[in-house]
Image (tube, rainbow, N blue to C red; front, side, top):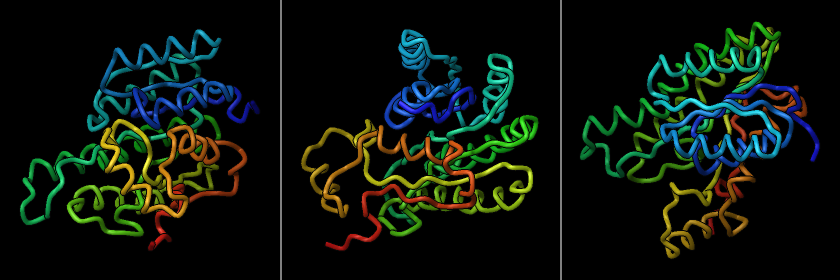
Length: 252
C-alpha cells in the first residue's frame, strides 16, 4: 500500500465505528499517526490496539464532538503525542429523529445541529491554528448529499446542518488558502454502517437510489477522505466532493 499519509498526524472523529473506524485503519496503514475521537471509549481503545498490533501509531480520547473543550483536547492530544497536527477528518454525525419541521421537537433540532454543525465550528476553531504551526494542512468535513442535491422528507434538521458544513467549508477554504490550509467537504452516499441499520428490505430500496445500484463500503468513503487529506489533492480546496455512487444523478 502506498504511504500517502506517511508521518502525517490526522484527527478522526466518529472513529469508533463505520466510516471513521475504516478511516482509522486505512490512514494508519498509509503511514499516518491517528488521533481517534468518539463517545465510546471501549471501541476506541480496541481500534487503537488493532493499529498498534500492526505497528501503527494511534491514540484516542473519548468525548462529545458537540463540546468545545473536547475539540480543543483532541488537538492538544495530537500535539502532545505526535508533535503537531497535519490534518483532520471531522466525520462524526447524527441523523436525529425523522419528522417534518412542523412536528419536530426543538430539542431534536438543537441536538442535530450541535452534533453535525456546531462540532465543525469547534473543530476548525482549534485545528486551524495547529495546522498553521505546521505550515499548512488539510481539513475534511463529512457532509451529505442530503440538503445539497436532494431534499429527503423528514430530514430537515440534518439537511440544514450538513448544508451549513458545506458553506463553512467554502469560507474556511477562502480564508486560509494563502496559508496552505485546504478545507473540503466529503458527501457520501448510502454506506453500510451501523447508522444504516440492518433492515435488508430498506437496504434494497437505498441501493436502488444509486446509479451503481449498491451501497458503499466504509472503506470506499475512507479512501475518498484519504485522497482529500493527501498531497494527491494539493490543488483541491473549497469543494463539496460527492462520493455517492451516482445517487445525486440517478432518477431511476
